[in-house]
Structures are given as C-alpha cells and as structure tokens.
Amino acid sequence: KTWWKNHYVYIISSVLILFVMAIVLYVKECWPLGWKPLMRGDFVGQTVPFVLELKRKILAGESILYTWNAGMGTNFIATLAYGLCSPFVLIFFFVPDHMMIKAGVLVYIMILLCMNATMIYYLTHRPEKALDKNDPVSMVLSLAYTMCAYMVSFMDVWYYLSCSVFLPLVLLGLEQYIYQRKWKLYVITLFNIGNVGQQYIICKFSNISLYFLLLNLLINGLINSIDFLISSISFSCKS
Image 1 (cartoon, rainbow, N blue to C red):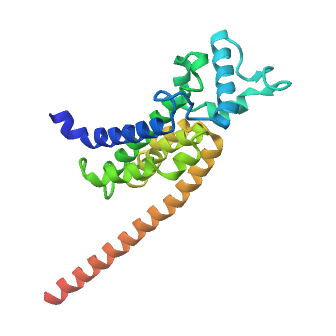
Image 2 (tube, rainbow, N blue to C red):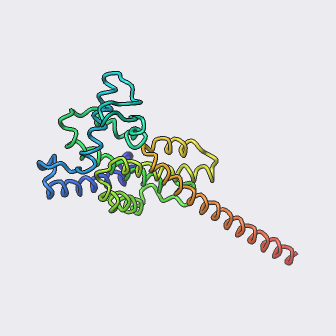
Image 3 (spheres, rainbow, N blue to C red):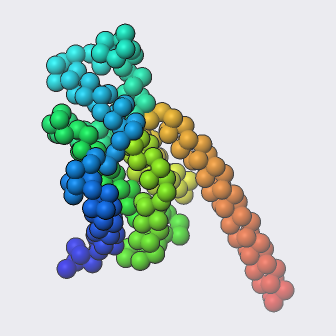
C-alpha cells in the first residue's frame, strides 16, 4: 500500500500511455496487434542497417571507428555520434535480426514511458516550486509532454525522441546547480544524450533557462531587500 501511494501517479500515467498505444496499434494494424511495422521511413532506411552493423561489429570484436559495409566505406564513429550512442539502442541487441523492424515499436513505447517518468520526477523534485509527490497536475503535464505532436512527427527518427527523455533531467540538474550547487545530474544527463545535434539544441535551451533562473534569483533578491528595508524603517519609526 505504501509503495502504491508513493508511485500511483507514475503507474496510472504509464497505463494510460500503454492504453493509447494499444488503440493506435490496433487501429493501424501494427505489430504486435497487427502485421504492419509502426516505424518506417528513416527507421527502416537508416536506423536498422546502422544498428545491425553496430551489433555485428561488437559481436565480431571489430573496430567501430570505420566500416566498409556502407557505400565505399564510411566513418562509423560519426554514425555513432549521430544517434547510436543512445542507451535505448541496447534494446536492439536483445532482438533477433529478422525482428528488428517490428521491434521498433517496443523502443518507441519504452521511450514514451521513460519520458513520462522523467517529467513527473522533474516536476516533483524541483528545488523551487516543486509539485506534491501525488499531485495529479504532474500526471497531466507529463502526459501532455509525452503525447505531444513532436513524438508523432519524429516517430521514425527514434534517437531524436530518446533525447526528450533526458531533457527534464537536464533542467532538474540545472536548477540543482543554481539553487544547491549540485552539478553531477546536469553533466551526466547531458553526456547520455546520444545525438550531437540534439545535445546542441538542449544546451541552447539550457542557456535560455539559465538566464531566466538567474533573473528569478535577482528579482527575489530585490524583493527581499526591499522587504528588509521597509521592515527596518518601520521598526525604526516605531522606536
């Protein structure tokens, strides 16, 4: 009972995500509730061949710096930096090669669930203005974040979506650094974003957030200074 009381917001929101995805898969006749693959386009043309090559290289003990199995040879480490460094790529290593395309839906659902969890964690663990642990508002906001149009538009480019899992943790780490001088969460989460382009975008967003956090500190400092000044003057007049 205590575990449910402490985590029911996570559980209910995750069940809602699974329910919505089940409806989508059934209506669109996608695997595992149909015969079609959910993720196509760039996922089939880029991600699957790259992941298969990475899997083959690691299992064969070959170097991941370069490959001759793409065109006339290419820099494979650049491909890793572009998207294959995401932690979610490990899921594909436990999937048979012939199931790789269909298994994309499992990665997609896992990303949605993790996005939901990290957003709720951010909203309920902020150093300032954190929501209550079981506040339904955190569930509503996390579902809005998880089920937004961005997640549909970039469904086939799953490594863009995996970066969205770490964005709430990056913001939480930034706030912890400003208010509590704790830097580890910010650095670790930035390191785990598996796409250099998304790292750049998130860093720019962090810079904008930093300016607003510092402005908020400045405004609060001025308000406190004015309150202190007024209180001091009032006390002096009464004396």
